[in-house]
Length: 271
Image 1 (tube, one colour):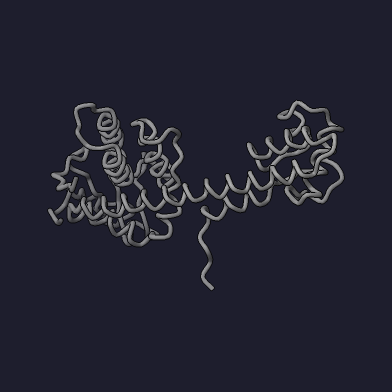
Image 2: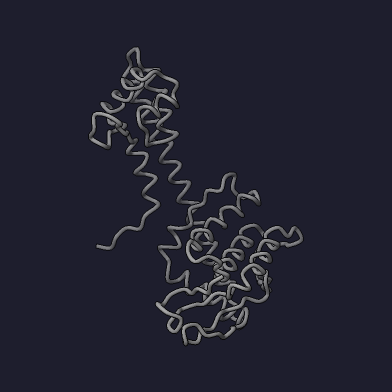
């Protein structure tokens, strides 16, 4: 729904060129949602005259960040946690307080809010891939909030992203549980007097899939010779493999585990 600008522009000059910085209003965000159920920087462009978006000038940043913080901790607001996280993300990206890292911090803010509000037991919600996969739409909808006051379109997009990411996370967890069960059976079937030690080392690799032998010893509580023999068994079973090719300071990886995790973290290159 279009409502017009959600702020105003302040015109200044840098390097002889005119720039128009966007000042969000109201701050913190308070849209009439219709819900069912010390340096100026810029975004895009190479110089002030051809930028895509100019966030508030430095003298406004402290004020708007303070108001965003008050918004996050305002117990009188009736917004559900997901809506609150969506609004806070837009406001943070609009303020764009840092020269670098705003996107990463803005995405982390979503997970932290949902964790703080009790929606997540741990702050683990990897929205980055979804936003990268839909990058143009993401930027377009952020612009629409600023230029047209269309909060609902952003919320639809955001909530769909949360749902997609959460479903993918559940599928990943189910695949990992199946992998762990299959490989544990392989270790148990191997038998031998060292079976209990190998299982203990296998549990260590489940906790951290990339380890050196000294780290295996430390985490498992086993001696170096016992740990080395146990890792060798896992190598023979094809559960772990050595990465460095060296005889000393070797590093081992639980490859299938890491491959499953990596599937949801990088964009597939177009062929």
